[in-house]
Image (cartoon, rainbow, N blue to C red; front, top):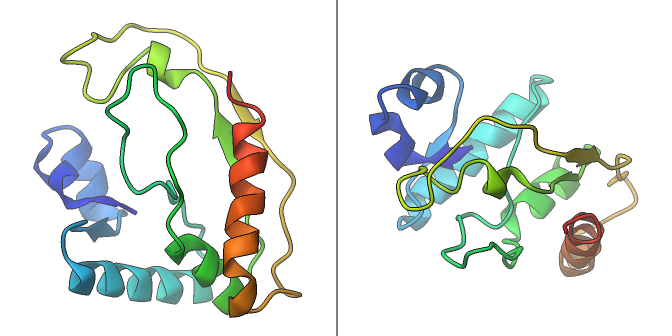
Amino acid sequence: MGKDELLNNPILGIFFKTIDISVNRDSKISAFKAFKKAGENLEKGMSLVIFPEGKIDDHYPPKLGDFKNGPFRLAIDKNIPLVPVSITDVWKINWDDGAKYGSKPGICDIYVHKPINTSVLADVDTDHFKEKVFKLIDSKLV
């Protein structure tokens, strides 16, 4: 899933037009349609990558932003494991679009956590689940 503005990017646009689920973050209808499409793709056995903050923070260096409920409700509703991933230092290589702070080649550190089983969770557990994943991802950020 990605913001629909990326459809206009000359390079990323090709990727986003073919396999991405675009979402207009200012439209609740767009968000609903995107999560419906995401659920359909999950039922087909496809994987899904969601940045649960739903935006890139303007603060430099970045801080992990509050998570939205959607990805966690989706994992619970579809009874699929969630694999948290901490991307620790990519902001040092390329901040947002690179215009303000530049970009450079380099290596970023990615920590893939153990999958979390959602089969024992219900919708009422969404907030606790979201907080657990937030703490887990944040624990690896430097």
